Image (cartoon, rainbow, N blue to C red):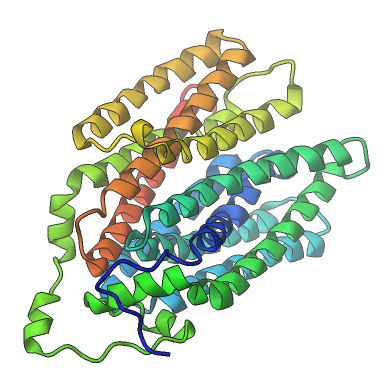
Length: 417
């Protein structure tokens, strides 16, 4: 099959809605395993009461995710995107399965050895996330804005789905013997199946969608070398090598130039996630006091954050509600830091209703601002530059997350740990 016409607009963008569904599912798979581990924090808190699992697992995860994404972004222009994303999804599947194996092998006993094993799996999740999240955001940055929005909505949906599943499994097994463990095992069995589905979708379904083939062919015609394996998987021959004059036309901006031109967007991503992760999930899991909801309280807060994060990622689809002004984005993002004293005083003096409302706003603003930044930044660049910029913004997202989970420990000052 020859390559389609990449100069004019694609005819009717065939397969657009199928691509949006697949992107949503792939976004889900990018964080489903990790969110599963976060959402069963009540089980790990029971199993490892002395080790602060909600905080430690996040702190272990982040350096591996950050180190990997920095290396991958540096070599992005020469990376085989297909191999990169497939490796990430396969690693997610294997490590989700290992959580089950480790728990069954130890018969659900705690202890330092088991906790170290869980930490190693958390690190593997970080490596997988860096491969998939950076690879997919970069890949989708040169496609339709609706596709990247669907992927980002899928990331948030993974949190909402895992929270809903956790509430169901907790209710189903609450009064049974070993109920927490049974719920957690069922959780990771579902997670393993879902990651396997993502491997199949990315390997066989996604590259064959007409809209995906069109945008990848367009990126190849603009000089992208990262899409050749994906085009081959979609049945399209790669374009012949350009001559010297065409090669000069296809030259792209370097990563340093792209970063300097978009430093405000990069800071936006850093600040959004530094604030969010300094509160979620550690503070919400451990520092909100005792309330009438009892052991359900932390689960309800995490569920409210996840559901509103998902809702926030759909708001920019309404054009007049989407914030694209660069200065306006920075002002709104900086104003979110007022949430820190708001959470502190609500935890100290407020009741659970106020805390649920604040948590909902944290999630809603996180999702909304993420989509606004990641869909606005790539506009006006060529395909290879959009891919590189997508990877760079994910680097700053993960740097923000790492800063946030480190700052999260400050909530423990004066609490005797």
